[in-house]
Image (cartoon, rainbow, N blue to C red):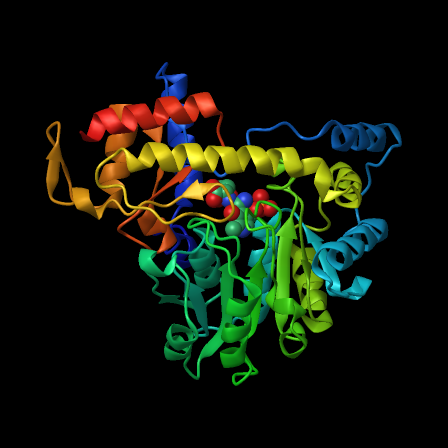
Length: 395
Ligand code: PMP
Ligand code: GLU
């Protein structure tokens, strides 16, 4: 805390995922053999046809500032994608392209929240939802879940969390970090509660849409009575391995999209020109082209679940999507492992980094202090070695 800095930044937590990735990088630079299972980042290369589109864009002299809300033909490709994959209909004024889905989420918080507005976060939730909400003056309200209910909220727990101050709900399905996937029926049951509270805006983060082992992706926005107050957030980081290219987008009510456009126009302007051109090619291609990655993630899920089952005290649900496992490791609280006492999930995550040279992320950052998050967006070889080291470190 530095008093010369604003209260805003002093109150903000550092992103735990990025902090752990930076720590792992630092230790690696010191010569340590760290296996990074902290960052949710596909280990595949960007598909060649997407790379080619980016090279073409450079050669075709795409270099100028872009329209704040995205190139018109990219917005068209997004509209077509929403129709093709989600049966959702949008017009161009309902779409805003941003510098990653993270910026899309930040725009939404900034344009929708007033001081003291409550933001419902089914827990566990993705790490940045709470700090982005707080930055905009919002008050995160966690809706607890349990491993027994596959880390999903129920209509009852949703209803219990709603107050007269509730302004927004943000959730991801497939979920980072739990891998849970809400079925259409489950979403409909939640929508049946929300229809009674017409002022609540739903932010549906669907960035893991394609990494879904149930093969059915449902979206709250497809319900006629929720369409006008649901914003779908998506992007190309996960499905196309384009994490560093920084393209995300929203589809939602026009009044919200216009506000995001205005906000972005003062803060960052339009997203990167080359990455936008490449995103057109990515989104226009058939999702079948990325199926091989999804198949690989599914195999790795089986592998990591089998390996975790052999380690005492790692209790997990069966993730249905994304590429994380989120084991409850509270079994170790109060125990001493090779001279280190483990009092919480952060202690275990640090212990694993120091003792096993494996980077994970504490569940505290995701609103569940009994768990740690392990990303399996890594090679089979690294998963095998990492889990062997974890097992040795805790037994
Ligand atoms: N939402 C979720 C659930 C995520 O896991 C991530 C992490 N990449 C993001 C949003 C942000 O993605 P982007 O790289 O597009 O900013
Ligand atoms: N979304 C990824 C994760 O959860 C990337 C890191 C980040 O953007 O916070 O690990």
